[in-house]
Length: 126
Image 1 (cartoon, one colour):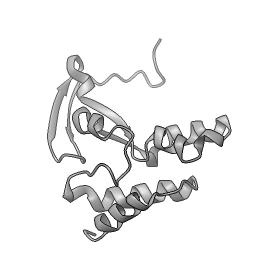
Image 2 (cartoon, one colour):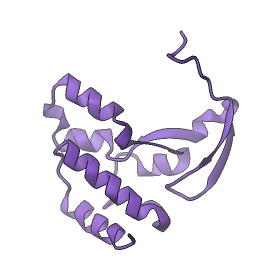
Image 3 (tube, helix red, strand yellow):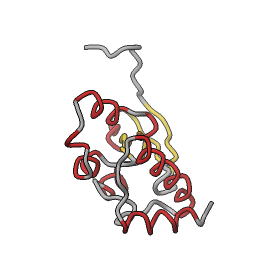
């Protein structure tokens, strides 16, 4: 089945914001590039999304403000961790914190004490 638009990426270059590394990939190794949820789905579930209706969960899961193309290695390391447990490279920490906070606010998701402390540190880089 073809997806809307019929576009298939066969090769490209990604400047990974999490690591700062430039990833050159082809369709054969496309799993090198992954789409990450800045505010992880599993974390959101634990923080209250389990109580949301289906429509709100779908909006959150597909919200472009919460999605980011990244290299697979740091994305797997990040997993479902918040900023208190996992940190992107220093050069991206300000933007990461800004986006994370905006998503948390948009969906009324709580930010743990550890995540809040880390985010404050990240914002000092702005």
